[in-house]
Image (cartoon, rainbow, N blue to C red; front, side):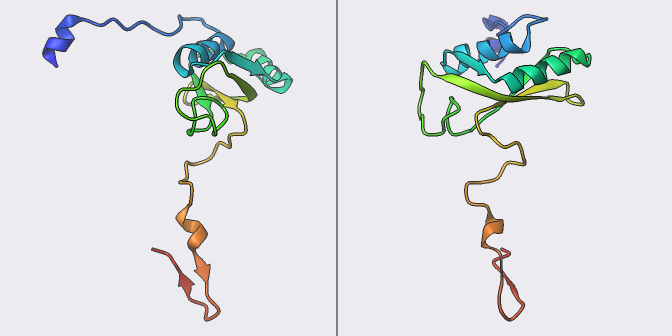
Length: 133
């Protein structure tokens, strides 16, 4: 590790200070995900405008999207390219200091596996709860 550290780094920031949320998302989609860019809904643009009017600065961006693809379409596996991501909503996590950009039909809630164990829990006719483990 020390030898690597002595070599220095060739990494560069993806975007500079003061970059807008739109610019940050375009860089993420284009340079990291391999897409063409974002298509902003009127609703998302209005939400972003409202945040700015309320004095919330543009800053770090958290992209809420499916974990199954780099695109918004869970069926596009591997390294798809040339796609656009639909921006549905924009919210602010003020305590954490970042803007959440909601892509596609994603629901923001605690992460769950594809088949949550809670779906197997059952109350039998004899009143015994089954499948708790």
